[in-house]
Image (cartoon, rainbow, N blue to C red; front, side, top):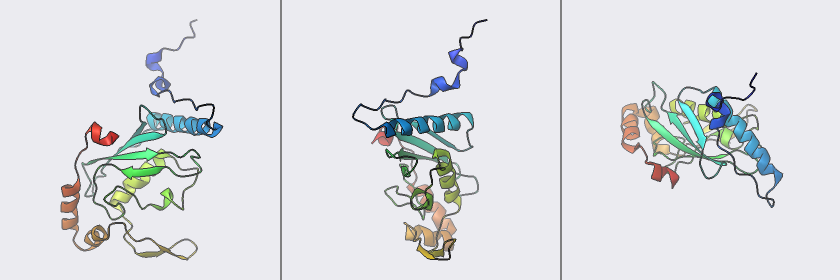
Length: 195
């Protein structure tokens, strides 16, 4: 019996080869690469609706992700591109995640920076690319507009929205908010995404 695997049927063949760390690089990079390969396989084998992510061709620690705007939100029907940059100590530190597609949202500034606790002080090594994307997809429909909130220890935390105007419009003039979402959004070319 032939034990050769048919490459056309092997899903791992579509995972790009990760660059091997240089001898001067730490073994930590190898651990990060292994973790990211596992996450990529999970994304490919058990995809969640409306989200995807894939490493860039030249650097396995840089990924491009896509979130399809959730139904019932002002982002419905929109395709939003993001960048992920993984630190050398991932998953013990969060990736840097930015919206590349221009977006109008209370918790995202005009540079694409995101105010989301799991990307900052609430990060845990159990999170992964998929959980971050699902959290961001949820944030699109349920922004954190509060200026002050209590955490699980009843201690006050500052949670000011990054885009105060968007937060105010979300609460007071939702139709104007939706108009500004569509006015700000535009699909990006591959060249713009690479920049």
